[in-house]
Amino acid sequence: MGKGKKEGPKGKKITLKMARKALKITPDGKWRLDLSNMGLNTFPKCILNMIDIEELDLSRNRLKTIPDFIGQFKKIHWLDLHSNYIEQLPKSIGQLEALCHLNVSNNSLGSSGLPEEIGSLRSLQTLNLGMNRLTALPPTMSALSNLKELGLFDNQFTVLPECILVLSNLKKINTKRNPLDHTQGESKDKMSEELYVMRGEDLCKLCLEKCKEERQKNKQKKCSNLIFSGLITPNSVAQTNQELWRITTA
Image (cartoon, rainbow, N blue to C red; front, side, top):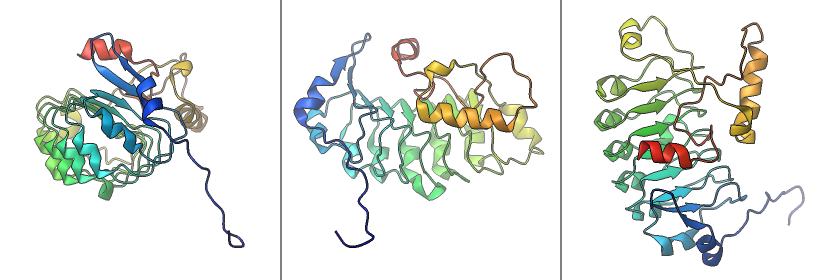
């Protein structure tokens, strides 16, 4: 190794045998692969041998990229990638026609990191894009006719993206802690920011630290409970054990 050159920490390597041990059946009968919080810095290609999984959790790892072959998981309806270092989603994400719940919060996504193909996720019901670097959304998202909940908190939006104003089934949107122009009266009439109460022990370490930082910045605001207004439910950032909300949203 050359002078002054540093190697990053090596992530854990997942074998097919290890992945199969992490596979389980949810209470509602879905095949769920949980590889969360395992120190992974590369997407485990071995799981291509488990192409029929319906739920995949790769949250709280060190992933920077998501490979194109993610589009081969045609049966996935629940995908959790929160708390990684992802800068861009592949175009093949749009091939996940069965996907209902997608969480990519607490990553490094800029607006160029969201492909237009995300608008092809016509089954999508909840989408969490919070805690990223977004300033705009792909116009194609106006085609997400089944979207009910959208998290945009802790980003860099100055205006609400027009593409979401036409989503007739959108019931909850969270835009907390964005530099929004609050003169957008019509948009505010249609969609209001949501507030949720969460317990600290339900948060992963990274998100809890961010919430604590926000509370320090807003000491003047009185609060009798632990309030984390940036979290939208159902959301795996807010709850490590997701069996309950999975059943209630099935």
